[in-house]
Amino acid sequence: MKYRDGIEMRVGDRVRIRNGDTGVIVASMDAGEFSPDYPKEKWEDLKTGIMVLTDKGALVRFDEPFPQELVSRITE
Image (tube, rainbow, N blue to C red; front, side, top):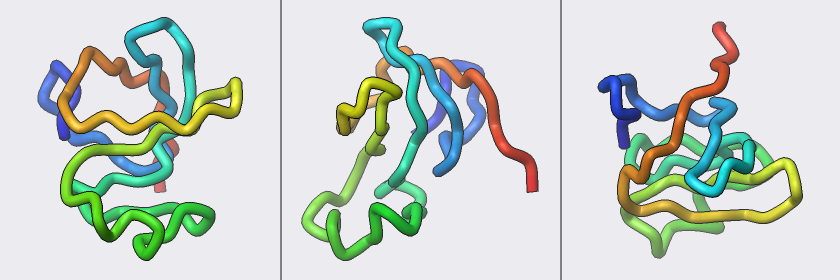
């Protein structure tokens, strides 16, 4: 999935989701990227979307590009 400005969503991105909460993308089924704590095997039945671990501890799946907003990206 992509942000509104066309940038691809990536695992590790800090995002603000539609209710104003912030969190980190821990899995992107679209890009085939998964963080070590959320490996591909846990999500192999899901073909699209992203998983966001919010700062409040909720794990939220988005399968459509709602207005998630990129807050920061760790550069390699």
